[in-house]
Image (tube, rainbow, N blue to C red):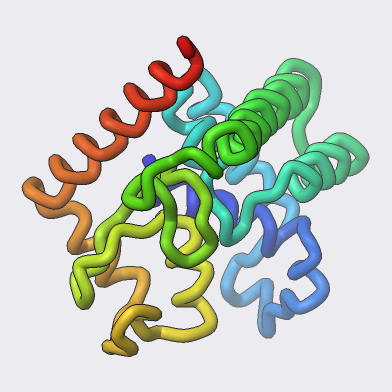
Length: 200
């Protein structure tokens, strides 16, 4: 789900966001490149995933390409150009609000729990509460997925030991059953800690 969300966010931002000014396709007809059709297909894919809460969280946690303002702009663009019509555009807009709610909930968690959280519950780069932890194969450090992916876009090295590292390698390593199990256990531990703090 994270990979799908990240891919959709990236292409949506490229096609309707700030990056669209940099988008130039030579021989568009030759390659059957249709800007409007691509946006429609991507927006419909979002709508097809709109009933899955896990997808909302995955989009909200994508620090590389997602922002609430950017998604709102995409909704306005798609509505103004009549790329989606009727129920479809309303479903896309409603999805944007659900994703924003997940994003704001994560922000609120950082404000509520960040100062009291144990160090191993925090991303060591930006000190936010871990919501989507991944383990770096090159140093063994556990970090927030969106934070490390954003770092690796600019610098393909592990920030803790400067070893060569790419986002693809991080994703592949974290698909290993034993690593995935470790990250899921950590997420569960963090959720249980949050519940206990709220109950105090």
